[in-house]
Image (cartoon, rainbow, N blue to C red):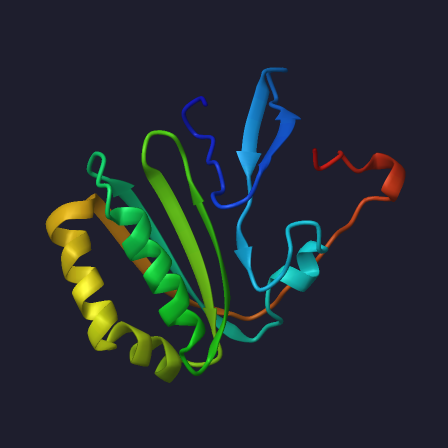
Length: 154
């Protein structure tokens, strides 16, 4: 994959053509709804809070996938959690956007003892860098092309 293209992880690849005509392969993972569900069903209604976590992996770590899978289980158990979408490219650049009902819910997950241990492991082993932002989602808009103009998912 070329620089600037993210591959969403967790589900089978989708094929499309980039702006230069090159074939771009991506896959998607949005927790809570299947990939073929309309986008408006995969992203929570506003208002809510979004935690945007952008990271770059620091090499290969065999235990990273297991740790990430455990965090997916843990986050689903948290009060106020609404869902999330994740993407990671072949170079290790990734982004996860999680959605929450309140800032208190965000703070509760941030302070969860198991999540604190995962944060420490991320800083010490998994990530060469990361950036985290919390934003209030004030509005949500959606567009959907007519069926005959939509690209196939496979």
